[in-house]
Length: 138
Ligand SMILES: [Zn+2]
Image (cartoon, rainbow, N blue to C red; front, side):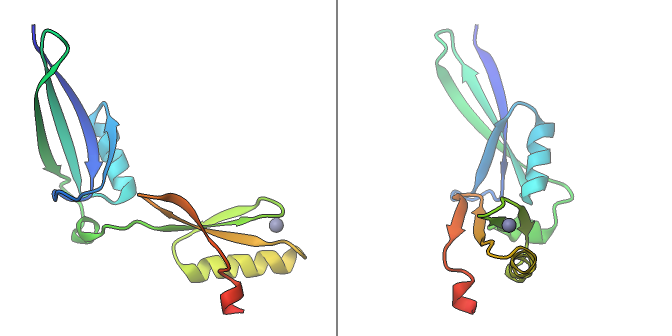
């Protein structure tokens, strides 16, 4: 007996070069993740599994999230800036570079000889350190 296996992905567009995140077992999980990432679409994959556990057919269906904003749909890069003190380990997350700078200034002012590092988080690459970020503005 053939059976159908379904799973869900969150994705940012219906194009071929889209970013996808998942898989999730339920639509609710995928939807929650899509909203968190500001993705405008869900992708429902259906695998038809044959008698020998082989995939006979793959179907995918895009579902547009009803109340996704046009901005969210067009936005391909979700970026967060993470600051972390290399000395004491205190950390924070920022949307704007100037916020990271202010946080680092205050932290290094309050704690002598502490050194704050800056990381950029993107969906594709994860956390990536930005070196010499403060020296260039000094
Ligand atoms: Zn510190």
